[in-house]
Image 1 (cartoon, rainbow, N blue to C red):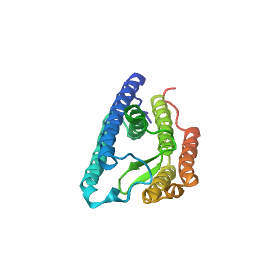
Image 2 (cartoon, helix red, strand yellow):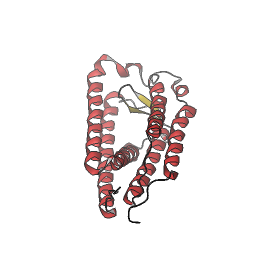
Image 3 (cartoon, rainbow, N blue to C red):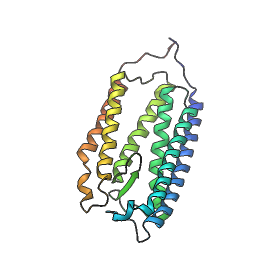
Image 4 (tube, rainbow, N blue to C red):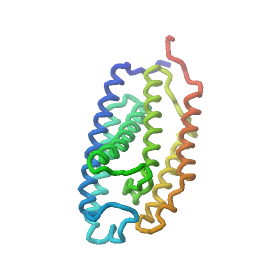
Amino acid sequence: MTVSITPPKATFIRWCLVVILAIAFGYNEAAVVVYLRQIFHPEGFSFPLSANFLADKSRDLLFAEVGREAATLAVIFSACLLAGGNLRQRVAYFMTIFAVWDIFYYVWLKALIGWPASMMDWDILFLIPVPWAGPVLAPVLVSAAMLVFAGIILYRDVAGRAISPSFWEWFGFCAAGIVVIVSFCIPGRHITEADYTGHFSWAFFGAGLLGAVALFTKCFYKKTPGKTGG
């Protein structure tokens, strides 16, 4: 079977372009959040959030923010579909864009308003389909793992030694991702409560993240068809 291999130079150029896109999107995200904090939290952003965070007068702005997040995901999906030549590459580019975007979102916020003060500060991470919340360190760890995964996938793809998860391995990755997402959604329901920190479980979050790392490591060391003609 012939293995389709993207030239290394082309892959590197595409990777650089999607990284630039992600860094720029991270700035857009940070700038919007600066404005939103002025609107929603003129007295200063801190947890627990005030009880009127989801008040009727704020719902139109919240709906607009949900729409903006959905539009951002659409841009990310479009970019990875255009950049990748096959499913593996598209997944890798998606992870690259999402990870760099997320990391630089906090880099830009730090540069613009000096926040977060520490990696343990809490943030609202997402609003689809419900609010996600947790300490900044948690999503940054997920993004760092995604960035490593993406780099390895692209390198192996270029080398003709593609990482090819089985159906059950894909299922495991999806399950691990759901665990991580649920670990953010649970505390997202309690962001106005005084004991909000007690609703985030590092053990539950870690089980999802480490499960994904373990599965990826298994796929990395799994024997795959070698490079043709090699």
